[in-house]
Image (spheres, rainbow, N blue to C red):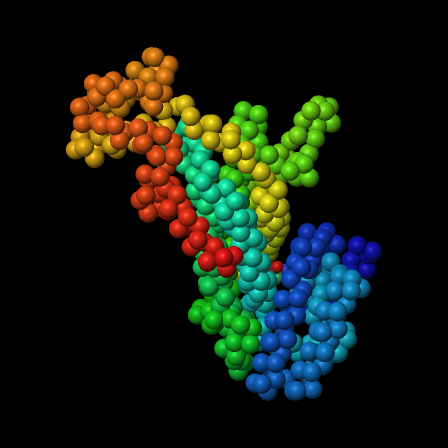
Length: 467
Ligand code: ARG
């Protein structure tokens, strides 16, 4: 035996092999470096499995207790940082099982009865992601709460609403902020939906065809808090839809964070000067002493690629895989873990960032002046006077052209001048041409009128219990 080789007896599956695995193969195939984070869920799943095996008389109660005790000790060792992970044991599942067998002997070797790593790895990942989904919901709620606090604080402040990044119509700042509240509400809904499909127990699918041993899948599922058991062992063995769905949901969260980040970058620039991000949440330049840079939102924006990349990565892993389990599926974990770490960090820092952002209300208000942002209001006014909308659009276009020519605002036109465009215009038009009048006229459900925004904010505050 050369130094390159390892003792075949070390492998749990070494029986049919006459040569030991090459060290390069052990290196190449190991996943322990990253799947060790599944240890708690692996142990939780194994304990439930062992209890079921005892209920079904597949192991004795003494063996069960030895397994449970051994697993508890291993968990403490891992948590204390004293557990020796062995790359030659490939993954977390075999590291724990080997340690258990070393510790409790024959009973440990019975733990894997009626189970394969194929259903075990799916179980562990589902249990792990189910917890992560809850953590994501908590972090998303914190971001939502930060938006509600800002919307409450700045209620009544007007600002330009943009399309094509051109000033379009005046809106309330709180309306803009609550738009993000809605985006993150949908994210929470998406993750919740994804959790429902994830929360089905794969255990018992075994390698891929089920097992001939008299197991009780339903009782293990119940003990682990699953809503049921998967229906087809072959589907189960190669299914990673639950991970894909979560990655998609994470990608959308990250896109939402990135859009917000982009606005914060723009708004904190001298060109806009809409917000001031607290000093503790900005960084300086090593050469330009005057600089205060929005690095946090830039990094959040910059991390969008890797989260969407993780989704695409797993989609490509699954593409073209024949049923059922293929080792390719081991490639599921790194993208999922990286996306989770990235999004969770982004959400946590975004909540803090929002809590440390101040809006320049005067600048926002000032930016609503100029740019003919109440032109649509004039058109709507004419529509109310029975003019077809297309005609009104054209009339107002000519009014705007006149103002541009004379370098004045819509408000600066006299009633007589306006009446030259339509005799139906009366003095009540001036209320609508003002920014506040325009904003408050948009009373349609979901619109920016203060009554509607107040209503939306109160509803949201009630939903999150901050009111
Ligand atoms: N380390 C593998 C993974 O993470 C465990 C499953 C191995 N199953 C197998 N039949 N080789 O996917």
